[in-house]
Image 1 (cartoon, rainbow, N blue to C red):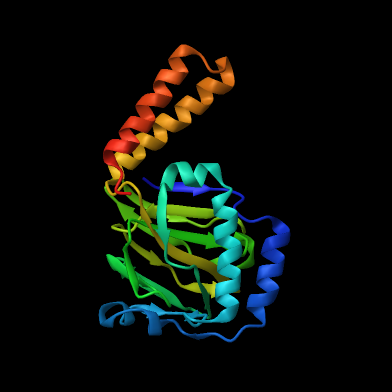
Image 2 (image 1 turned 45 degrees about the horizontal axis):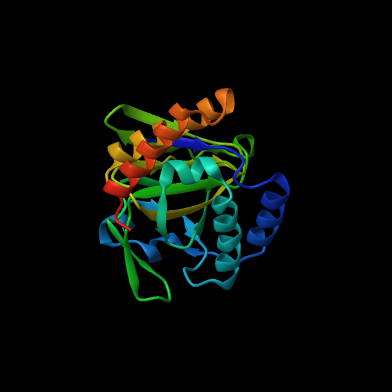
Amino acid sequence: MMLHVPGVLTPEQVREMRATLDAADWVDGRETVGEQGAKVKQNRQLPEHSPVGRELGQVILASLARNLVFFSAALPLRFVPPLFNRYEGGENYGLHIDGSVRSVPGTGEQLRTDLSCTLFLCDPDDYDGGDLEVVDTYGTHEVKLPAGDLILYPSSSLHRVHPVTRGARICSFFWLQSMIRDDQRRGMLFGLDRSIQALRARVGDTEETVALTGHYHNLLRMWSEV
């Protein structure tokens, strides 16, 4: 399942974050990938242990914790703290797949990457190129979202970032381990939850909506790895 989550950050949060990032020190993005990824990756990133990055990452995670659509779709269990990248002057990231396991900096813990997230921090008109291309079983999808919006997609998907030919593309990116490992089951739960919420808004808490809510939680209980 691939999902556009609008308005994760407010315009004011985006402006404040961009001002901080524009003044930050960036490093070669190849420092955070393996040998295969380094062959196709050309961009810059904030260092993995950057205090600035950690502070901004906490703002993002706090916003996501309040986003009901994101929580319903992702059912997050644990996050890799958000990282930040910058593409300009033809920089790009060739076709690749994210590693299946990531270390959580400073904890010694590792998590399985079920879902990948890209949060856009500049508007499409600010740069040319730079589309995120995601390849899945339903075809190829090109994504270029407004500042503050996020795309959520399975980490098992092949994807790339096209060359940026004008301006700068600045984003946050990160991974999470979901309570539901299987993407199809996670998608079914998301669809069921959204349908329940729509029914409750229309008819209230009836005997039927209460029963459907019970089925949702029993499926979550059956399938979750918490």
